[in-house]
Length: 263
Figure 1 (cartoon, rainbow, N blue to C red):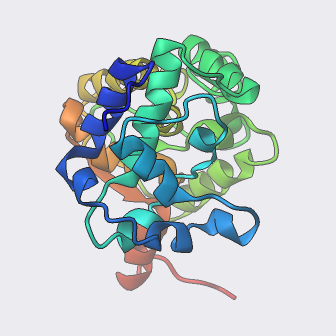
Figure 2: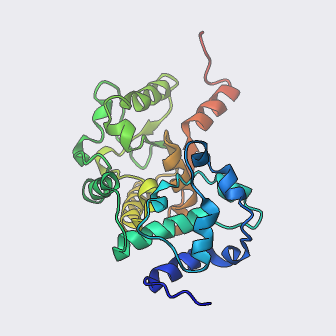
Figure 3: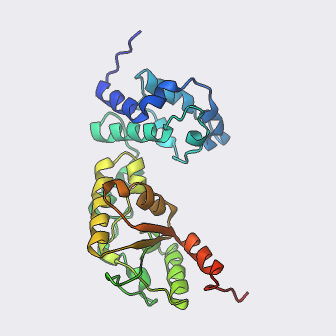
């Protein structure tokens, strides 16, 4: 029996995102069993996958927006189905084709990222304000490390202490680092998973051009989201630089005996 989807173009895009492994899903339910959502509510992942297989995706439901993209289901799937790619493609169809409703909070954040380069909608020139009481220089081509704190530590008054603490440690042990402040934009990790592919590509290309023009070789990040995107998604767009998370960097300094604890 052929199911006639009212959104044929969208269902084809989603099926393509799933690729050949999507056809191999035999509805074992391991994805549903491992999904953390099911600790607090029902979230039947295998049903979503089956709907994708037969071209009957529910674009109007809330399930498209529930997935946290933690990849627990992908790691457990015995058939190698890239479930996260399917979720992302579903959201992209809703956003680009207007065949569903985007949650208000997400829509506002997406507008802020596209317009101001950060989800809070703060002015770009304030991105480096977290350094006012700390000595942090502007990155130049001769600087060893670019520190990229992420949008939230850069703007949120309660979280900026993460960036400040990182800079304080780096200063105390004499690391040659700098920031690009107002020139930086959101890494785009979350907005891509939310389905705003064009916005992601715009943010990514802006950052890649910025890094290349400043001869950035190593990027140090505080955010796991920035780490994932810079390391796994930027290379396909021309981003060629080493990406290191602050926890990795501090661990290496401790191992080398360059960072010691007094307490």
